[in-house]
Length: 248
Image (tube, rainbow, N blue to C red):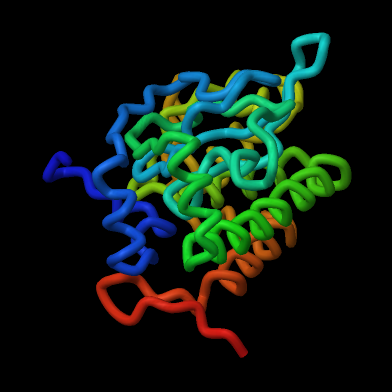
């Protein structure tokens, strides 16, 4: 494995006990994840699960008309491919790389095999799935009831939480597609945030200048998603310390 890339950059893999991690380590394949790469097509057979390290993957649903909207994002906190261990081998949604980077992929057979052992990986994946469902539910509510500005701030904050940089390579067209809104709405909102000194936008790049400005404008949906992920995984200790899930 490359010295500049490490499976421990993914929080779920980093939390596995040594024995469980070593059973998977030799089978984890480091893969580049370029912007726009389609990992899963709707209805297609899922051959691998993906554990992003520096990439972010967007899960979104595409309508018959071609319109689409993101239902959730997955970065270094999680895994792409929960259908594999939840009883199905396909999904009605798409998985597309939103932020270029890297990740590790694992053959579906091996993930299922380890999941069925009933060890810590199983408990980690089930807890993460609950957090992902919360994100999906909150995204649906946010897109229905909150303004484009609030939605954009939520999306930017969740993205920032998954990358080390404050600059995103992202076009307004892609952001509009993620949020399921008109491009003009993103252009107007981004312009307002730029005039307020919160972001700086140039074609294809969004730099966040004041995170506090986003936090002041975002709706409660961002905090709900963050709180639930933290609640479900806060008692997990990484392999570098004590590895366990504390059961009350």
